[in-house]
Image (tube, rainbow, N blue to C red; front, side, top):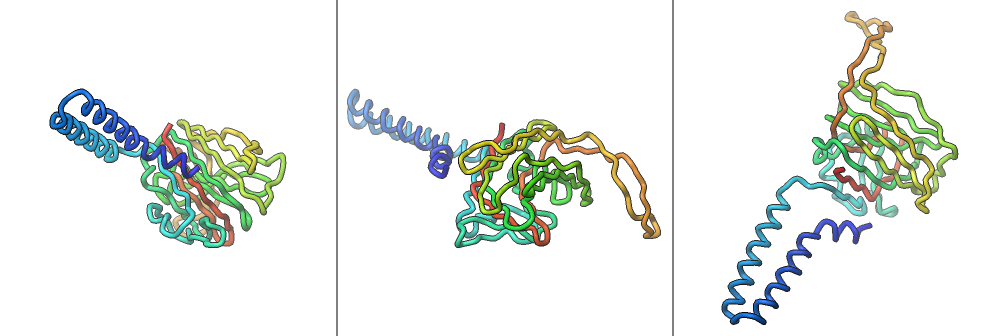
Length: 255
């Protein structure tokens, strides 16, 4: 995976190097050395500016191996997202709001992959996060997955979906999430890349929720219709309280 991402990340540099070398060789074989030097210099300068231009554009993918200290610096949130040396991965726990990657804040359709291992209770991942208080979150438990919506800091949840076979807390699994418009497709693969779960989860346009406090601070139950707007937003991870999970090899790519 790392080598594949390395070549994907620097493919334009490799292409520019090959073109520079080929043109330089042809120039020295066909024209005088001085003219060949001038041609090579012009081509090298143009290819350098071209690479700089490509690097300053918005990236179409990001990769975080999460296998050493400091790789969480691009992520914002509160709680514990920390490196675990003996596992060579990161642990997410004790985070009510979770951690999101702001670089993907304006993305709409994308593919979100990572490896995860549940340590205690569950593993939560985030998509379509407009902020830490507005997002779509899914909790993966041993035997089911539970979708959540967070709007203005308030959590709402939908019906859980059970797995045909329980996950093993001793094993790593690969999560593949494909977000296209208001449809979120979730896949869970085992260590042999065999599919264990594959299901779409449409994001509702609206849903009824309960308000539990009135203006005087008394508990009440009032139903009202909440409009939901999650057409774009960042990816992230979240575990709250004693929930603990390990994560690594996070890859996000625009579709």
